[in-house]
Image (cartoon, rainbow, N blue to C red):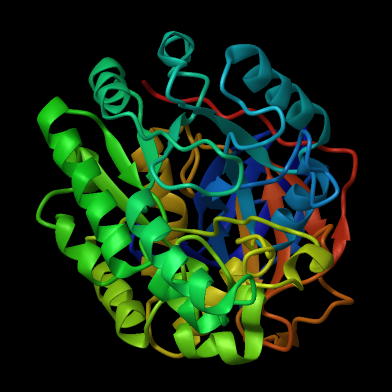
Length: 445
């Protein structure tokens, strides 16, 4: 049995940092303690001065396979993820074909079984006409249900209110939603398209996909969830106004309505369109500096529960286009944790709080079995980080298939040195173990 002893690590877990050793046997954490003795066949890793975190769980990615593999695939993006300290991902259904029936959903699981460097699950996609198929989804084997309440990549808009009510009333699984009001966006878009044609200046993106569009959709979804008792999770909040819709007066385990913020909405603001253009064109849009600060406030006071990426790569050729022809989305899994640790170094958030939002809370929210913590008996999904090693993001060290990052030129103040997935050292000082794959995660439901 594989045995690894990580010595002298600063373990960040459950709100505190302690110095100890971690013994891994097989896939699991066998023991946590001081001065653990190694057997003859144990591999020893000296973590002196480094910080050991539970691997990040990214609850929203688009890895583009099947059907859109000129942009990305599960192998390339999970490889980038493991270098970025993400050991588990949950992928969205808007691929080609869409994961809107059980056959296509299981095909994606089979691809990941063969090619993913990290652990994985996929969401089943709800549409206006697939409720019967949706209700076949196994809650112990599938992360949840994804609904697009605003149009985005893949044309999966659910806009029939009777269908929405039936979905919300019929399943106990987590229903994750993209919230932007379609009619508001169409009205705003027409105004600017009439004026500028296809070449609308990027600064108008957050006005077209406006605060009003986000708030109207989010508030309606929450109202329906309260009415039906549905378990609702709202993806990628982008406005300060929306944060008032969420609670922080009860533990996460007791919340029926939860929320997420993405790294780009915590990092960029509308003035950045001047220099980064379509490279930071997302749906929902990056908005004002005051929106960004409102998101930070809600994250820190626990109205926002999870930090994710919404990793959504497109080719440079696709992105370097006019407003109407440049798709929304960008790659983030390799750089998300380093970007957030930059905020730790600035004093914006503690490392303990960051681990809560990127590891513990996704595990709680989706009821993931034995992951998201550094605990005896849990899977050894672990990340070792040197908080005193700087590096700069360049095209040459970017691992996404699309070959670019919105963080190009950014200096990161920490370096991920090792990543363990299911007890195996998958990423070690820039080198990958290409023969070991991740596992399908399961759920305590």
